[in-house]
Image 1 (cartoon, helix red, strand yellow):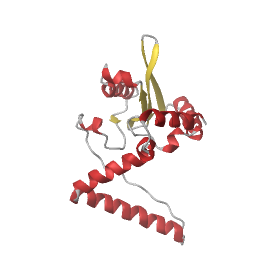
Image 2 (image 1 turned 30 degrees about the horizontal axis):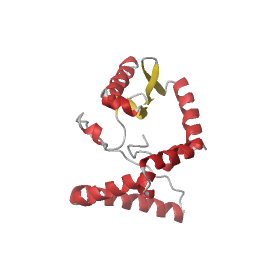
Image 3 (image 1 turned 45 degrees about the horizontal axis):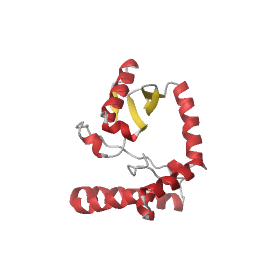
Length: 186
């Protein structure tokens, strides 16, 4: 996960681990999630967390041994499991959830709009400012997507760099892995 640049600093913090573990346990117990583990020759090599609602099963989070990608199509493996969970629970839709990662486009997914509801207390200046900033950001993103594909590519590179401490800090891969490892153990 770290090597793909898809990890934010929050994902490496102990509080995120505690939150995710606690939430997952309760959600699995209530039938709102499934934790799937994949073994090879008795060794755990991958796992995925599916969120389950009445209308869809969503692939929320997964991790796999990097060596596995050279042997299997990990996405296909995990999608098959997710679809089996959906069928078992009579849920009509499987979603890869948000994000436009390259590995998703090969499946020709149906893109759907995702609306955001911002609740603000009446008369709150800070709340009104936040709501305006959310609206302005959405407007700007829509304009960049439709009118400035080159700018969109540049923005995506900046976003990836900002989420990948190894690129931001300019450290070697090994040093970044050590740094991230220490942060994850705190």
